[in-house]
Length: 204
Picture 1 (cartoon, helix red, strand yellow):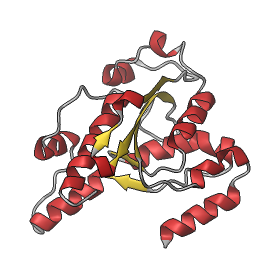
Picture 2 (cartoon, one colour):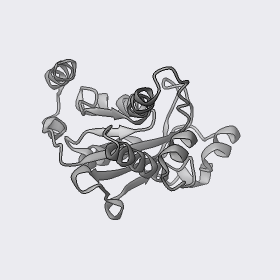
Picture 3 (tube, helix red, strand yellow):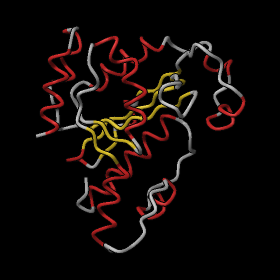
Picture 4 (cartoon, one colour):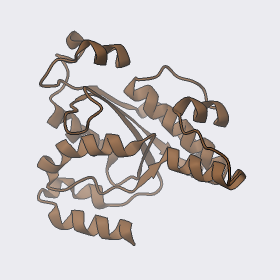
């Protein structure tokens, strides 16, 4: 009910018919998305890279051959602390795509598919800073939070247990391949593998 109301509210605010495809719900595929940014604070964060992959739940398959990855040019150079986290140097992103164009391409890739990710709320909040000026509304897509599904899975196993939601814990416990971290595409693929691992356990 809340999901339907949120989509209805967003549709009423849509001011560019070009983005109506975001409201054409598709459940045959899901998009796992991840962003690397200049800051962890949403208000200050600028995009540095975007990675996304489509997942076909019925086939238990991640479509890595059709993956989405773009470097994005921020208005300010990444500082040294930021570079140490994701390895994207100023010279790596200064030739990147303008953020508005990068987000436009991402929206075309997503369409009306649900989104999934690890702590997806942060990535969606940053993306919405760019989506709202383009479309007039926030992303209306259904969202599937990996850490939330994992929490439900572990809680059912042991209601009194402390549940560690660190990414490495999920990777180890669900036995998915460990890809290099803090790369937007690798992180999107990892989240996709976690989604499928939880789906196999009945928590997709």
